[in-house]
Length: 217
Image (cartoon, rainbow, N blue to C red; front, side, top):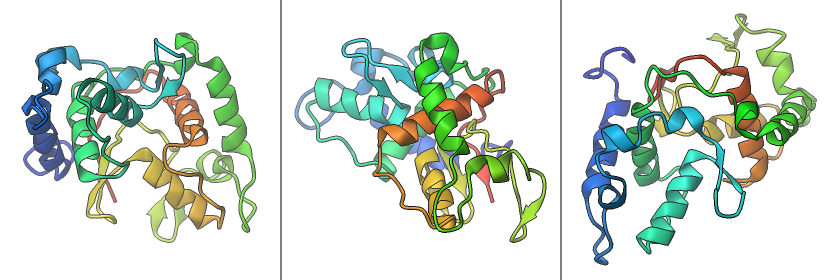
């Protein structure tokens, strides 16, 4: 399903995102394409190098956060909430333009501090089950848990269409699933802890090809 764009259900989100990219908002502000031009050229490789620092204030943003900031600052729009279909569609359309490109190591882009924080969280035991990410995705990858193969936790395909969800979903949604699975309290949507964890996962995946928007069970 993932290899065939006509069978990959995530491509419906891509189509919606491409339409939104070229559609000016009703307030008269320019469309995304009005500032950035053709999505195929201007967004090439963007997903492979996010999360990244905001050049203005140094804050670390993931790709959905950067889209929200751009929509609010340059289009004067109320940003679409995380996990909304509109935001996921735009993210998927942008992420597609990095397909096949290697994920860049965050540590090579001045994010070593976030990598370290993310690794601490990755190895921290959490929740009532007292489990860490590493105990599943390092120690037991390749084995089965409840009939599902445990992966190594590489984040190369997000946003992706998960058959369990029957919808596009973000990496943060998947991480929240893991937290609730070990009976831990998830962080709020968009929290810096989620971004640090994504940065560490991308550090682990550095050099792997981006395959967003992917399909997973």
